[in-house]
Amino acid sequence: MNIVVLVKQVPDTESVRKLVPGAGTLDRAAADGVINELDEYAIEEGLRIAEAHGGEVTILTMGPERAAESIRKALSMGADKAVHVLDDGIAGSDALATSAVIAAALGQAGFDLVIAGAESTDARTGVLAAMLAQRLGVPQLTLASKVDIEGTSVTVRRVSDEGIEVVQGSLPAVISVMEKINEPRYPSFKGIMAAKKKPVQTLTLADLSVGAGTAGLAGSSTEVADFEPAPPRGAGVIVKDEGEGGAAMAAFLAERKFI
Amino acid sequence: MAEVLVLVEHAGGEVKKVTAELLTAAARLGTPAAVWAGPGIEAGQPRLAEFGAVKVYVADSPDFADYVVAPKAELLASLVASAAPAAVLVAGSAEGKEVAGRLSVMTGAGVLTDAVDVAAGPDGAALVSHANFGGAVNVHARVKSGLAIIALRPNAVAPEAAAGSAVLEPVSFEASDAARAARVVSREVAAKSARPDLQEAQIVVSGGRGTGSAEGFKVIEELADVVGAAVGASRAVTDAGWYPHAFQVGQTGKTVSPQLYAAVGISGAIQHRAGMQTSKTIIAINKDPEAPIFEIADFGVVGDLFTVVPQLIEEIGKKKQL
Image (tube, each protein chain N blue to C red):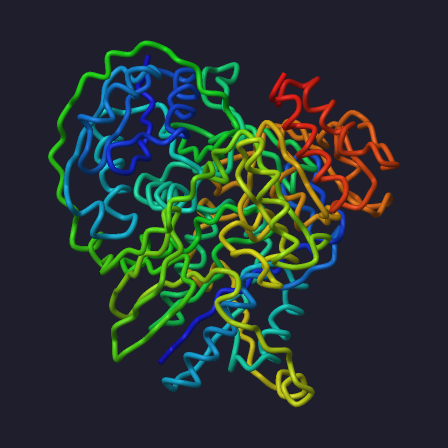
């Protein structure tokens, strides 16, 4: 089975995240880059499916040069190879533009199963997997807390707002995974050494026949009008409990008419 | 004025609160027109009229329940083609965002997810507010031209009653074969809690690592129940298995925006703040005076939650009797 796992490098949530003045795009140089957390679950799920059913795991990343660090980490976890869409023209792509580029790369690489994290910690749009299913015309098996594959049939437990939906579709398909679907493995020393020799193919927008009007800031259908740091919340009242802390809090709630 | 389509969230004929919020936001951009997918419109129509829906497109097809997301997106796409709306508003739930994503691909229109406010810009087109990076940056965004697809965070816009005629307009609908690719074979509906829904609640009481155990977490439920709140939990709590993951508030859990958020025994790491920083009023109880949660709290008590919370519960009880 040809499994493609989508991996996004995001700014570490522990570091200060900034937007670029003017464009309102993410300043990717300002913060440390890490693999988007939910994507680690996607990588692990891909590796487990390949181990159980046979096949190859390809990492697909779109991002600047430094995203190569995240690709290496994914390879050191055990993925077989990677595709890195690297082009100045992709900077500032919104969700719709991103999905066009990824769909083109998937079309070129070929796939039986695409696995993504349910959302990224930077933009948090949560739409990419659904967009890809629509573009590729394959089943959308998203928000999965469990994945079962039997032959060409894929069944997932979808975490919906109402509970769980058991959803079924046929390969090829797009899956997105939720937190805690599995326990992502740590790269072993052997894995880290092996990753250095694994093939990483670099593709440009031209290689994918994606026109400049489809990707990047110019090709995006949305734009940031303006932005500003959130005003600091008014300094609150902090009291030390010396026997009356709970009563003081109740008085505050009464004053604000919550009780 | 152009129509603004609102995809109604409903279960068993009951219209969810977020739909009233969507109708209120829609009225700022044009003429609110509700879109009802599935059965039960008879029960839901009065509620839609109460919040200003001028008409209701009704498509009752089993496809909406039998197949994931795609049929709803196809219904909206067909209405976009026939009604030429200025915008489409959906709930910023996980499913709502997916509907928005597919609709965006179908129509080529831009999608703005997790909006915390919507207003008409100088040109009348939608200008959307986002609270990015866990509420650290306020961003205004818009589509460059044409149709705007907007997913609005539940509880962010206050619903305002506005009389609407809610005239029913039946629409015939049949999903395409492609939209029938992911089939729902069964459902396990979560047991209905007596407490309000986490993302719709006016008050959320959340507990963190400081509760120490599943047993210790019960004090959070007690406090929630005396103020009629939903219960939330930090990641430390759900990771430890003291409370179910479905109640996790934060970066990788639910995002909430209640009138009052109580963080009890929660240090307030960015992971957690990302899910609650847009709450209107924040109170905190933590034994560490340096806990970052106090930086965003309107009122905080530095102390042991196991003495502060019982006293708080008792005092609330006294005030209720007055």
